[in-house]
Length: 196
Image 1 (cartoon, helix red, strand yellow):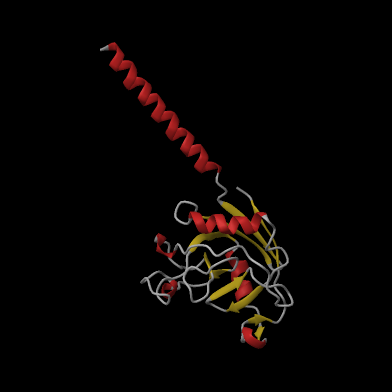
Image 2 (cartoon, one colour):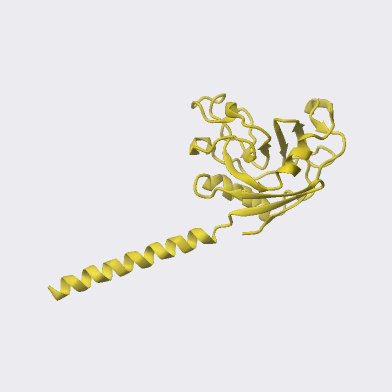
């Protein structure tokens, strides 16, 4: 009887330590970044739990300082702002390999969320992201088809939504294949830094 008691006690202690270790590891994950732009700063809370691959991909670009000096190249008032792929000359840079789409994670493209931009292929997102300026339900996952797969939300703005709106209200013009959505006055991403 005493031996069984010690085994159960040891197992309980091991499990308690294990779950404490896991919670410490999860707490150590970066969960917030600050995006410095030429119109002000935005603080973004990343959802590591529901978008682990997407957050890891985004943080790889953040930690390599990839976004520094890039621009918001697509700005549509009251709809979205998109950046993270082009510089002031609208030149594009080499990216890491695309990340698998996590649009099935249950997060919705509502106002203030940040999601991955992509091409027709659902799994083609790399460095570009967009911020929703309104609820965009049509961007949510609806089916496994390329059109219906959706865009993976991986975080939300918790401070600086006024900056996102100011970017969205910038005057735009036509620039070749970029259509009419390029800001007349360039809006830079100065840097993105992990703050928590």
